Image (cartoon, rainbow, N blue to C red):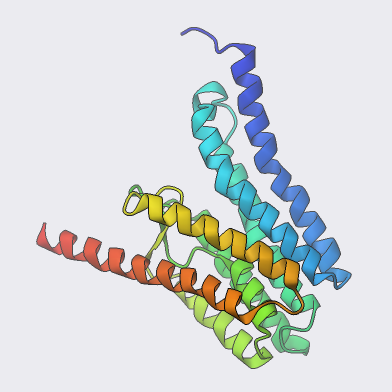
Length: 240
């Protein structure tokens, strides 16, 4: 087998470095969460989502598995996603009064994080047909809406606990950048949602209700299409 040229190895290594930057963002999230700089943390969430949404494409383009077979990029991705999508968002909510006071607040913050340790450790968390199995630990998105909508503490607590249960329910959720069905629409709408997220964060603490509702339209689309595709897949499995 011909050795890979150093340029290919360097390019593949840079992709891993790009992914690893998410860990640095997570540390900043924790730092600013404790300082009470909620808006800054929301911007860091956006940066982390941008990295997560593009590093997979770059990894496939640079053939990182073939060029650097001794480095587990998927494991790196899971580590970074866990701390940016689960750990930091729960800390943000807990440290800034969006969860109950006392022991109950600790429980509500910790339970989703524990569920996410399971989610990110599953070998089938990302299915062969490119879906997420179970609620895909989008706690950063949940935290975003808790903050910009200003949900009451009790409603937030119930929402987090319900979504924690859904981590274990085998519904297939869209993987926007990879699910084949309606791929172009999924990518376009996800991109539009990120733009709305940025504008809403820029307007915070007084974001436009219209923009919030428009962004929630994508969330409704995401859930509806995920449920429809799960039902369709189940029917096909029964017919076979």
